[in-house]
Image (cartoon, rainbow over all chains, first blue to last red; front, side, top):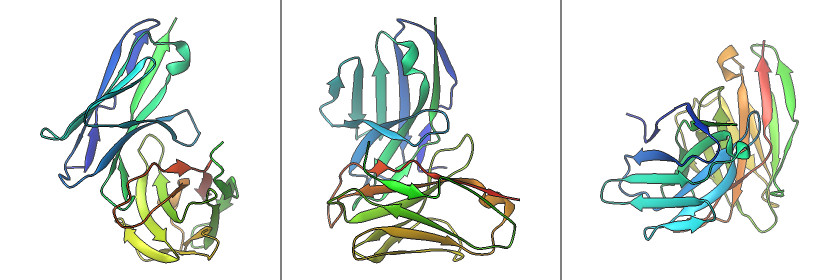
Length: 109
Length: 115
């Protein structure tokens, strides 16, 4: 079993839709959590950190459930520009970061 | 821009050759992590350098080696290249230390093709 698992998708949604991505991690000692966005043939870029209390940044909401070792990302009112691969990242401590394989999102007109 | 730079951006090597990839970390960051990303996969952790010492290693053979310099820039060396080493190599910079759990910022990557 991989340490960080994501639904690979692809998710194909119309503009304006709400879409949710899930991520599970196996290392219970993991200490911090992030979502990254990666455009085709580009480097991953930090989208947002994920806090136990949940956090929101505009149309994006991230949730963490430590008991279930589960992280989620919700995107509301999808835009064409949201099309990308979304990577879940788990920090095991001392910045030892492990990534999921990514979930591909395509937003269509 | 993250301030993390990698060189070269693209590279073609022949099987069996050796390659050195370079990374300059973001100002103020003391930790560099290297990742290998094959097409359609997530980044796979190779190793991390913190204050010039290796500080964790993923499931990669010893022919993958690295070092970190006093200015915290870093190199990744791969010996005896194999076709499966073809991938995007990413360097991530962060402010590390015992108990630190900060965000990591990536360079643009080096795309290595082994033929």
